[in-house]
Image: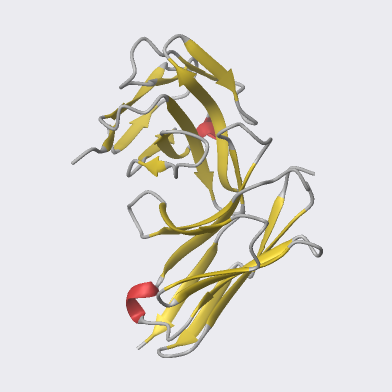
Length: 113
Length: 112
């Protein structure tokens, strides 16, 4: 119940294309869903986040779509650029009121020039 | 600018040795976390702390310990290093439930 399942493991997209990464969870007590971006040799950095009372959040080229009934959420990267090539992690905050997160296994995105 | 720094960035050691990884943050955050990152497993929580003198076990705490004597530092100790503990270790801090976690750049630890 504490897992967050992320797919695909790796993704190759042409420049200008749309990158889509999906995550699914079991625990309905999760109350905050961030996405992190990680470049080689660096720590993860917060990209965008959403709460379950919102179905979509957009920041620039990055959009989170959230489906509470299906317990799924996804990251869409519009107009993908080579600079977006990185590993992306979804996460879910555990028991409400705590500061612990459960992370997905990561998606390695490569955007071809 | 506030930051979170980890040291060393790379370390090679032998099985059975004690190893300590340092984490120092200047965000003045109460909450600090240690994760390990392995292919196919994402980030797994080792230990965490919500303030000075407070420490808690995460999902993969066996063989690791932490101590919190001040707000800025949360060192991670491997009591007797094992080859299964070869990994990349990340420290993170956050200011509260509605604040993002800020990560350090990691320590790559190899145990031979």
